[in-house]
Amino acid sequence: MSNWAFKGPNGSVLREVKDLILCFIKNKKPIVALCISPTLIAKSTEGTEYHPKLTLGSTKESSEYNISEINEAISSTGAFTEDKSISEICVDEELKIILEFEKINKGIISYSKTEKKKYSYLSPEHLKNLRNKLDKGRSRVFQNPKTYADNAVYEFLRVKKKYKKNQLKNIIRYHYDAMGAENIIGHYLEEFINENKGDESWIWCSGSILDKIDFIQKIENEKETTWKALQVKSSSNTENSSSKTVRKDTEILLWYRRNAYKENSQDWSKLQEFISNENLNEEKFLKFLRKKAKN
Image (cartoon, rainbow, N blue to C red; front, side, top):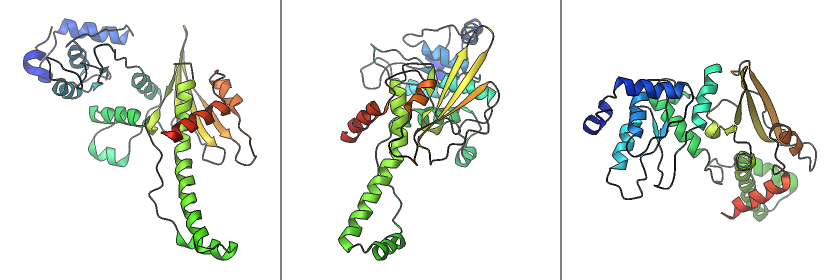
């Protein structure tokens, strides 16, 4: 069916096989690729709009194949690879749906000035970076800010509040701790929603890969396909503007967890109107945070 065994990613796939694979993908038919056959999928989709996520096994387990080399070869075709053991399967849905969303919302995918200098929009290199952002964006940890304190602020407080030197030292330390917590709370809020959403049609667009959108939902029926885009904020005093690049057929939903100008004013009922799950509540979110804080 192919000469990958002899030529690797420089080889080719039989036209009939390639056409069949692309036909299955176009018509949204599932494809199960076992053993070395994921290379057929990778080579067949090379140069197309499709960029599948595939697995050849795990680099952490013994194999008759050099998994690392094959992963590198597959990546060169524009496909993505993921380590999976012999008892696991690899299913790629999230990035596929995100790229489908991009087709009706051109330019909505993250593409920085630095990236523009390195590769073209939605090129294999750009897509590989997007996959990395999506994955790494789900494993952030607490860190204190890397910026330095403005001594003028503390000098003002020393005189205004008559703080002593040891009090100011504590204020600086607690201020940095609070800033670090504020920086990570938004991420943990998204992670909590993703773990407790129940409805798998909602895709977490982690790593800020979409402009001002945290979750998307694809809704299909016999007549049409529509989308919902959800922007999540922990507090009402943070910027909550929707993406300017979102077009028609997409409903923009905005939700913030708390009203910053009212004490104890969390509003999870609004979120539950979008994602119907009673596990999305303040009590369980705080329990989730306590667990994260102990790690």
